[in-house]
Every structure is written in C-alpha cells, then in structure tokens.
Length: 119
Image (cartoon, rainbow, N blue to C red; front, side):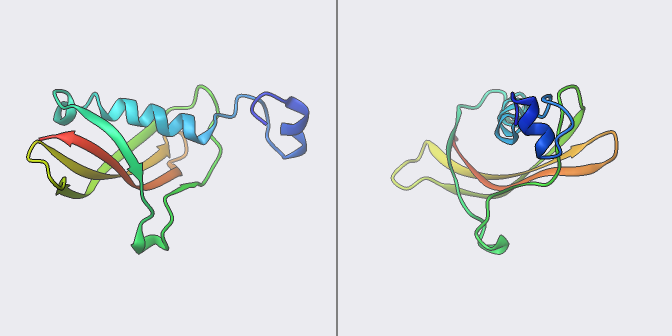
C-alpha cells in the first residue's frame, strides 16, 4: 500500500504518502532520546511487552498518517526497575501516545516499550 497506488486506492488509501506505523514509532523513539532527561543516557530498546492491563496488547494504529502531517508525541514512564544482577543498568517501560495536530486525533498508542538504560 505504501508504494503501490493501485493497491492503496483499492484499500481506500488516498495516496502513497501513507507512512508505515512502525516508521512513525521509530521516529518518535528517536525524538525521545533527544529529550533532556535522556540526553546523557545510554539507552537501547530491550523489547516490547504486552500490557496486562490492556489485554496483553502492545501497539494499536488507530488512524492513517501521511507524509507532511505534524504529530505530537506524549511519553510516559509506566514502570521502572533495576536489572537483575546489575547495579549499573535498569529497565524503563515507556508508553507512547501519538496525536495528529491538525485534528487532535489519536493515531498511535503503544504500551510497554522496554528500554535498558544505564543508571
């Protein structure tokens, strides 16, 4: 759908400027690492875990996003714990909500993105 105009039209997608959801999540993750709170930290994606409070789901893509649209991202640390057998590293669980600015529509919700971070 992202590069095939005929398939996109068949599925009701208005153009091939539709952005893949995982690309949006990756961009949001990159922006998160630029925040002051994380700017001097060593972080790496440790995994993605289903949220037991959300029927063990992880990410939902709720609306289309096209190239050129502006988005707002909200990050929340939903859990943090020390890593077993390590005094230097911990695990942060970060929830992400992404909203399209033009109409305030929630487009992506992602729970329990796990990051290994140096304490």
